[in-house]
Length: 179
Image (cartoon, helix red, strand yellow):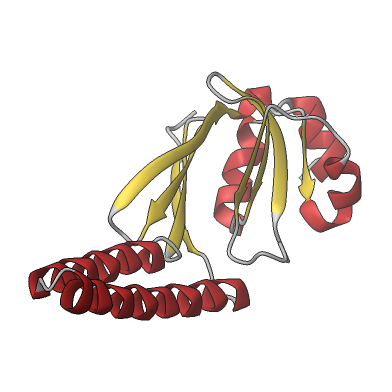
């Protein structure tokens, strides 16, 4: 068998919740800057303090708004899958890593959502484009660090075909037939 490597990037769509958080952060920056102005000029009579408070508020706000800019990277190498979260194209965090052969179940998330919500997992990983999980898939796997894990993700056809090659044979026939 040839080596199999598939890597996909999925950008999370900016939704209403993200817009609300961004608006709240901007209002927070304005409020902190105003408080900094009052404290710096009128209470301590030290204008530099107001500039420091404003600069801190702007920097913190930039970081908070940037944290809403999410991308997820799915990488499959010979049956080993990693799922990473990338914040603002600057920092990366590994959400989970697992072997496809540890897969217990796989399928369309929305069709099985009610059943999956009632099950117990050590870790739940949601790495999808949208918060409504439309078109998302799930896998129940065992990761070395994350234990029994529910992974909800948005694979394309190539990634899904690659995953099919490495999941247990019985599960593959049960979920996808003989194709």
